[in-house]
Image (tube, rainbow, N blue to C red; front, side, top):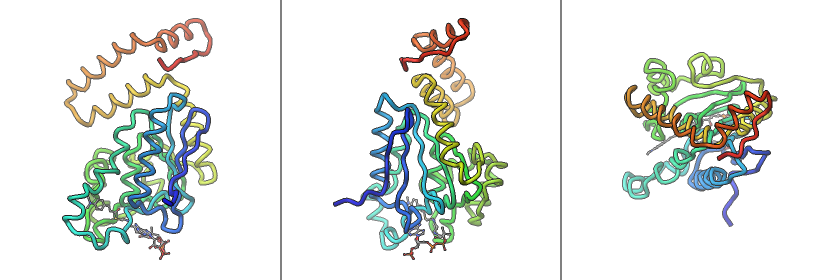
Length: 258
Ligand code: DAK
């Protein structure tokens, strides 16, 4: 029987995914990444879910790709099996907001997984690093691309070339994380944030996420054109009319996510 390395549960309109391979500090092997991808896609397809939280344990969010599994792989093994692309990139298909709640180590692939989320909430204990250089590898799950976009070339080069580890406060200062909270409040605060987000209109959230992500892929003119069309499209939605009329009526909006 396949080991369950990911727990998925519903908390109101939030899908909570917990990486659960604590003895290996949530090292990301194929089974775990397959299960994570399946849980993400299931929540994304579920109309009762408006936002998703990924979390790990108290000591580690995830200590990276599974070094034991990778140690003897050859080029042909990873190329033929489409290593990374085949299951690490599932998160890119997710259209609803994904929040990472990070305590402890987020290293290598673990840091890259957090970077693939839309919002990172860090506990005081969170530590971020790309230590692949120590193994004579390189960050191969988007780290060399997403980290400089998040914190700029100077800090990204420092982290990737020297394996420098950032603590939560540094990560906050450099713009790698959105918020820092006490460890004991990490899940509660992240779930509260996710619940707030999930209460908004899901199609509007998806349009915002797509528009912000588009800013990394296009020129300013193209990005603004995309944003403008997304705004125009909002006027075809029931929720936008409900939101504006609720404001005028001085009442809480009731969104139908349509
Ligand atoms: N993989 C496998 N096992 C790991 C692991 C990992 N990444 N990290 C920790 N573990 C295991 C340890 O081996 C140990 O197992 P036992 O000895 O108990 O059996 C257990 O978890 C506890 O770890 P430690 O005893 O080391 O715990 P410490 O508190 O002393 O240290 C640590 C915690 C996080 C500082 C340390 O465990 C550590 O440095 N871990 C490795 C971190 C790391 O180097 N991460 C980057 C992995 S490489 C690619 C694309 C992407 C990637 C690669 C290729 N291609 C497209 C080809 C990505 C690569 C990576 O992410």
